[in-house]
Length: 271
Image 1 (cartoon, rainbow, N blue to C red):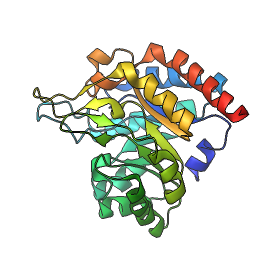
Image 2: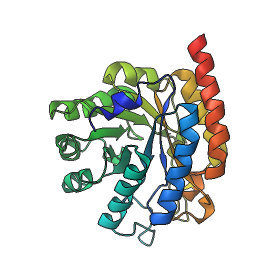
Image 3: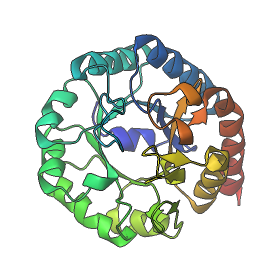
């Protein structure tokens, strides 16, 4: 696929990047992917399936990281083929870019790594779309430099994602002024990560906490301000998820949420 983000952002509704935090197995990935697509299609929401093939950024050494890189990437590719949707996954080091690009359509740069020049350039040179998450430590205006690195490497299929800004030691806040700022300064679609923005990192237990009851609050405000897309991690049983369960959306809550958000978007378009 070419110009993935242009395609996702070409409809009247917002687009959605959604799926589990990490691929835990084939059955769960297909179950989640099929359900999300069945919700998005009647609402006219363009959808890309998200899943990490490996979680490199974990609080503790004994945290689950993945089922194996190639096995997880093959599952991601299979979900994309069956559903006919783009697939997005994170990469962490430059030498992972080409490997992941053989299986997925969008390479995602984690927030903590958004300044890593070699990683951005390696992702750009695969020719795949690149989603750059804004660092929790960066001003929105600064994201244009990350975008410029990808563009200079010859790739214009880019989006940037707001995922909250560090507030003290163990919380994040979303500055919604950053959405129009990044749209103007980066010249890309801007996505709001409605689940990671509610993380509570650096807990004493070494397990990231979260406030999933506020996912709708984050999402409603994002649509009202004019975000082009939303990012959500979802799982049938977040309490049993092997990564980020504390801030994920329960899968059976996704349909009514997207219905309400689509109604907000439609209302705003009519103003």
